[in-house]
Amino acid sequence: RYQQQGREGLKSRSRAPHRVANRTDVGTEQAVVRIRQAMMKGQDPALRYSNIGAETIAAELERAHIIPPSLTTINRILRRYGLQRPRTKRACANKLPADYPWPCVQQPNQLHLLDCVTRTTHTIRRLYSCNLLDQARQWPFLRIITAKTRDNVAQFLVSAWQEVGLPQHLYLDHDTVWRGSSYGQRSFSHIVRLCLLLGVEVIFTPPYTPEANPLIESFNGIWDRNFWQRTQFDSLAHLETELGHFEGWG
Image 1 (spheres, rainbow, N blue to C red):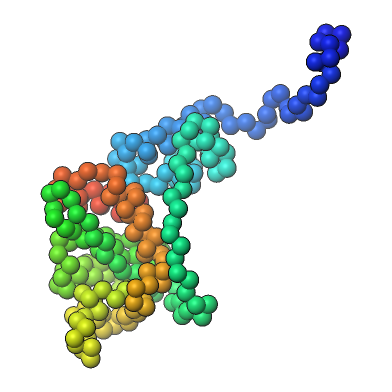
Image 2 (image 1 turned 135 degrees about the horizontal axis):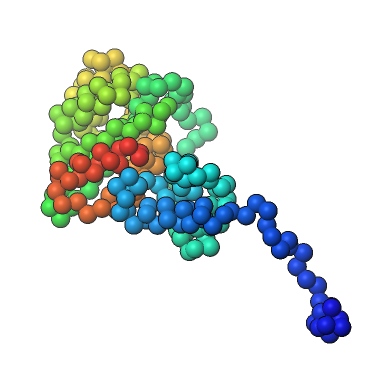
């Protein structure tokens, strides 16, 4: 090397192999890029409301009968093509005491989580997404209502339990609709009466403590990020139709 290149030829060279034996083939790499771009554009109805992470991409590769590389390799490919998105920083939640009595869930329909998300559109002044989640199976049941009344919420619960199954416990916050009026502290609300009539035990989280129900709060974030922010809804019928597509991904 010295005779051919002089002193430059004496410098240390990389010991990396010239050929990588387990390098991801070009076809798989391009498939990863195409799937990620389809997810980000939201043009494919089957992927419109899916997550866009490496786990979902690997599942789509398997559906296409392509052996997926590792999740680390998928993330490396996305970074190489500039398709990675920085993670949004979440506000630090208040820490609950170490002896907080978390419900112990081991079987389906042992505990259902309930919450309502409020949104507005240019055509509908205000609407509510009633989100119910079976904790054991992560099975969501979603419906849109235009007024958060006790009758609408009661009908939502009946419809949800007819499809998902009747739970042993219902875990929810202190919303007035299901907690009941503050003036009638010794009386049961309409929603609590419905639950007791069906043999469902109601568990309320502490007031103003969303961190006591982290799974439903996390699901609400996915609903907002993957569904609400990705599509412009023209009408309530359009919104309800698209909600059915998202429910399959939720």
